Length: 447
Ligand code: UD1
Image (cartoon, rainbow, N blue to C red; front, side, top):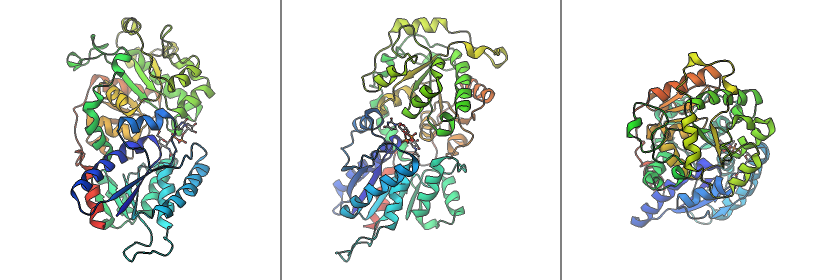
């Protein structure tokens, strides 16, 4: 049996990595191997958005790279379909396995679901591939998100729907999808996180940012046990947050206030960097006096993307630490509070291990990413989601996540609240590192 796995954008790589591992393990002990074939659509293509993940996750190079690159939704989706179809017909897999909710996911599932292999030579061969969707059934109920459209369509086209949380099964059955197609397997992203957690401890990122050792910058409940300074992390890339000037500005102004209490490190997604340049928002990012992470000239950040991280010297960060004001409260916020320089330090996009290390040691994570809501849940790191909704409700009911939306008061209230009321790590059902194994077991039964 042959399984064609599709990955295209950054979060996909971590999801397929553990399935490839599980296939490898299965094949070592099975006399009916499942042959994997990895297609990279090339939706993400920069070293830091793609290759770095293959290196960090020790993944073999993809069997095929479609090299589609960036374009509008319609152009990108169409180009992926156009380039994927001949590969599909040449390889004739029994199953096409897609992950997540990106354009590559919907494009390849659409091609695969309509494919009928010309003159199926072997009697045993299926007329076309089955479509398997990993991370099926998640719904934000917000059709303005391109990902929501991708999720709904991919699920409607899929034969096997692998879900990460029980709410997904309810969503799918409500949409008329037969129960027999739905498999609750756990979370592949969590498999990969648990596998790489220890390795991520070897990352040099804390040293490079001057965060290793020394007293915590603020006095949280758990700060005496920490081996590094307190800091927050920010990730932002949703079109609804960064493509509109007003929303993006309100988020940045709110974060400027939060950053007065705790320094925030911000690995900047290429989409977001483009918007920062376009809107002239460089002023929201502190130039560490003559430091490496200046945003004043975004060209510097672009240059950093292709270079190894340049360390910020310890003295620079120590100076910053001593300059930090006493913890501010909502009441003490004055109207001009945002005119103070924000202590938000921009970084290039980070590889998987560096980001995992930075996230594991953070005091607070602010994000609009879906995957990071799940990862912080497992790590027990307080997560403030800068969105009005989440398609991953289990991260709120059983995890460390809170929805803050994109309005100033709520962002500040939730961020400061989480800083002073840390959470205990909890593990949602089946987020135990064995999702890949369960998926492979189900695939093996099809052989
Ligand atoms: C895509 C996914 C999103 C996912 C995110 C993870 C869709 C609809 N969106 O959003 O669900 O959370 O990936 O990062 O599939 N760019 C580069 N280098 C790259 C990739 C992108 O410079 O390697 C720039 C390009 O200018 C591009 C922009 O980033 O136009 C946006 O990239 P795109 O793939 O269109 O969407 P993402 O915002 O990355």
